[in-house]
Image (cartoon, rainbow, N blue to C red; front, side, top):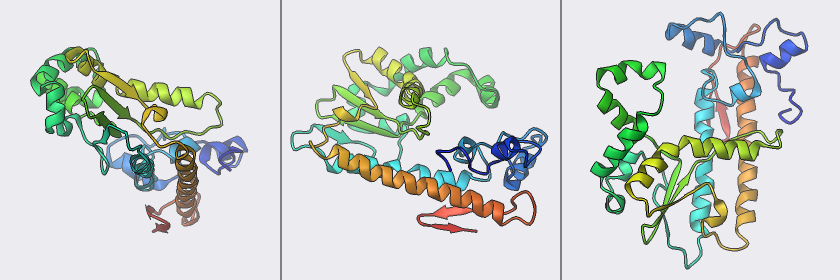
Length: 271
């Protein structure tokens, strides 16, 4: 269904004249928007992309639970390191913010927190302030920019033994129906962590940065295809879980909209 684009989401149903509009049909979405004081007149367009995203209040729990599937890939790469590898996987179990990373001695040795703070302020000031950030920004501009930088958190960080190369990993999910999806997602990941890299480069110009280049992560020859094949199987299972959750919410409703909030844990879908 995902490949054919025929998942029974509201936009598709509207396209085949089975619904009058393409707004999200999950009542959990409507309830959440009401609680936030937002209008329910113009609900987000319910596409396959929407129900795979934590931005859909009705799917957020399930999608967040399966998002961390990339941890399996991260652990597999770590286990398949060559004997000559000088890489250390800094965040094997959880994401870490810049603030947490710079509490470790080896990161402080790269550049002190104080010198980075000076550089990151210059860079953060160039980034527009979102509406939901405006109140904190206006209350204390300097603290706002500092916090925004130090709270940034890549999916994964690797560092070599000589502290001369940092590997910043960001894992993205995407449909491959668009033949340009790899380039689009790589550009998005690079843009996401551009500020971290700019600040570090300004403070430590001798450092080398590598973003999302699996071929440079010292994985044993012959292991890469095996690791990626296993990951593809997990991704397919995750897609199946998301669809099960969505359909169970829709089918659990007594009307045209769903009333049940679904949580997913591993292989099971729970009401």
